Length: 118
Picture 1 (cartoon, rainbow, N blue to C red):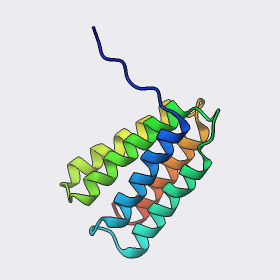
Picture 2 (cartoon, rainbow, N blue to C red; picture 1 turned 90 degrees about the vertical axis):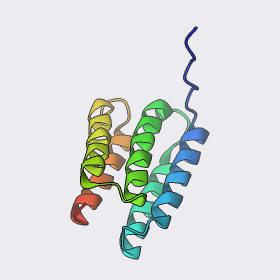
Picture 3 (cartoon, rainbow, N blue to C red; picture 1 turned 180 degrees about the horizontal axis):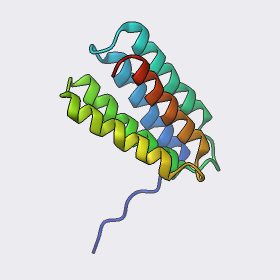
C-alpha cells in the first residue's frame, strides 16, 4: 500500500515558511541585506497564509523555495541552484490560478535573486 502524503494545513505551511526564513537568514553566500530582503519576503508570505488560501499550493511553492534556499546555503554549484530556481518557477506557473498569492511570492523571490545576480 502506498504511503499518503500528509495534507498541508495553513499552520504547516507557515511553519515551513518560518523555517525557510531562518535558513535564508543563516546563509553566508548572500549579503546581510540580501538575506534580510529574502527572509522578509518569506515572512510576508507566511503571514498571508490563512485558512482557505490553498495551503497545498502554497506549501508546494514553499517547498520549492526551501530547496532553493538550501542550495544557496550549502553553496551548491550554479547548475544545482539554476535547477532549483527552475523548479520554483515551474511550481509558480502550475499553481497560478489556484494560488495567486503563492505564485506572486515565487515570482518576487526569483526576481530578487536575479537582481542579486543569482
